[in-house]
Length: 430
Image 1 (cartoon, one colour):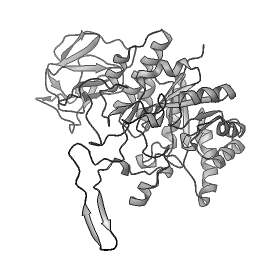
Image 2 (image 1 turned 135 degrees about the horizontal axis):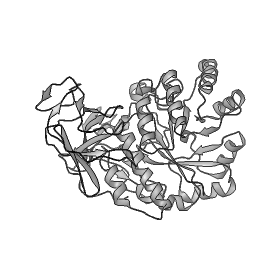
Image 3 (image 1 turned 30 degrees about the vertical axis):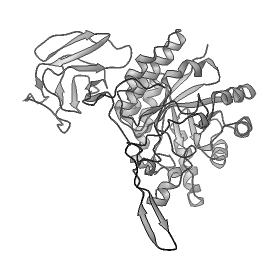
Image 4 (image 1 turned 180 degrees about the vertical axis):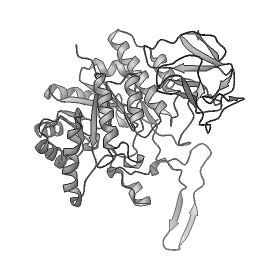
């Protein structure tokens, strides 16, 4: 039985490695040219992307290269060169968004698998068949599609792979078809430079053009001013429903511009959910414990399970972002012997160890610190904050660039976390 693929975002080389280490089967990212994340500040250089592909392939994982921008006529020659140069790096597929780019890729690199971006807004059999006939081997369906429609597409086109988003930021517009950022700041969403204007607070005004009158509309407390701010997608509680259809080949996490911790935790949570599914287990609370530790805009299960007209809880009107249940206190080096502080840390703070699934954490007690287990989790307390340069600190903060010594060697890219001061309350009902 072929298992569903877990596809994670790779905004940088570090995030690529972390996503793979924490359980992703494949990652997606790109060199900034013609990729929809150029605002991230050039995700990769060609050299870094090549290194990332080698890292993934050595571990039996895949890398999909994003060439999903919308090019101008003046850029077509540059686009052709970019396609050929990216093909030389030997990624496992290209992700493209337009019929013209799909056709061009098929002509220039006919053996390259081609995945159609969600920006193409495929929601039905007719559109899916058009792109399949043009050479698309996989379609990343519109975020507004339903499970029922996925099943119908798979029934008509059984050889076409289908990929769906299960987690991450949701676009206020129809799968990214938005011009608000272009209007207000000249940054074009479908060319990779969206300024996320939908996340801003807005004040409402009424104007009378005949009299020139303009006045502000007062809002009742609690109604909110984030009138276009969508909640974040979270389908970890519905993995069984999704996989039971047999129509989905890949589940995808959004978030190339998010943190390294986000890359780790989302990969870990959905890896657990997928593995549990094939064991006949569905431990929703376990998956949501991890996902609730992330900063988010509130969670929603959006439209895959329910029709859009049935949903009235997909917007966060009162805030744009809230703390998760935990703060990242530190990130362990690739050598595993030190960590860099990400949040105020004191001696004897109880730090939860967040390591890749399957990692063995040794229980130790020495002059540097100790580790111990409780309720199925492993924690660490540092008796002293000993820097790599041998200086002992009374406390360390996120601005401190001195690597702090660990009492034991931990797996590369392990995170240390502590509960946030702000309690988010119960798990989301998603």
